[in-house]
Length: 216
Image 1 (tube, rainbow, N blue to C red):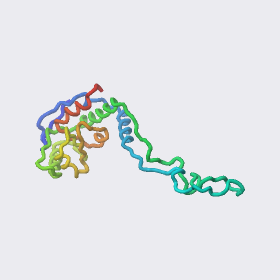
Image 2: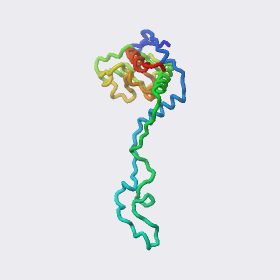
Image 3: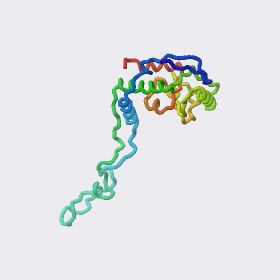
């Protein structure tokens, strides 16, 4: 598969051949949905927490004697059936939400999401992004140029860099609509959420080296 190569002025300056093993993978909706569900679950943290009868303050004294009152037996005022008592099956913040996915399946799902972006012409390859200063307005100029030159650019691009670039990181830090990620750290959710991907040309060999270690 071939796709256009842009400069940071939004002009087409050539073509790039995309690796078919990554960018021409047949879609398996079930696998893709499963990979997304697992990633979201693994990122989940326990924020709700209830106390059991052993954690609620008080309740050490027996409310009344065991026999002779005519009332039901009670050993503590913190029983789950009492008001202000503990919770029997409430949410706990130590719950483990982690799910497992086969590494081969996870990589295949990533390739499917990248293939979809390439198929929809939302995988935009740029020769380089050279900013005079690490300022937001400098990067905004690049975005504006690409929006003019690329159809269906969208409002939420994902910037893919071959290595950490402090200038680019600082220039995009204040842009809530732009997500920056290294080519070696791609994940399915970021790819699917993005309206388009801005990928520097040097990021392509990094993607191949990182994710094509084994045949998928």
